[in-house]
Length: 330
Image (cartoon, one colour):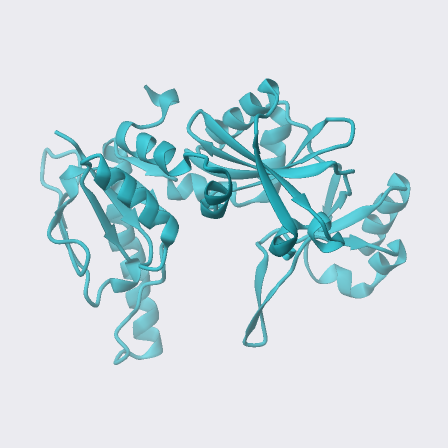
């Protein structure tokens, strides 16, 4: 019997909608839930009995009509949102209830993986893969080229490292592009370090900072890895801002589907396998000499506009893997 694919995201997620439509078109049962609906309008009842090896039960809510957990064979953990607690609770009560929802409701979903359910991506592996030092270490271990880097909160160590390299240096945020700033959200993109003496500012010591040698660019690329398939899009920028960090100026970009060298493609697949990721969006630089340099992997990286621009069948590849499971576990 065909298993059900459970997609966890909010209702505005066009990427999830495309994958759901692809699966539905194949006749594969799909149920989408938003974790923000729990516990208000999404309910769960799950049990484990003596002698049983997994939890059994149902999810019932606005988009899940009595979903039988035993029928879930794959989970697309696409864009989970925050639980919403009853506003009548006090702050301590709300904090406690949120923790119970996380470990109870969330725990039941994660336990599905212990019964052979495929996760794209497994939350535990995804959490580990969010750490850039881990990504860069594993990338180097599988043979990919990574930029010379330093992570430090020591101004003198940063200054000495940069001076010794005597090459252009960039600063790169490690916890994502979007950051809260006094009630507003602002973007922190990759930026060049113009004057190395700026690194001696005592404020540098307030947190960990990632500096990297700025690699010369012919162009950049995003490689979408789905199991053992790799879909790569060349990204060319026409402005200096776009050339420094293409995410800062989408209007300056053009896109072309390309093939990576075989060793780079195999390295990316091996990287994701070792990180425990079924899906990932990897960013790379191609230097003027033709060398490929790995920058980072976003385990929930976006791809929908790249598919629109190039026609690459990424939704189809995700549907394949949600139906069948990753090749390397067969």
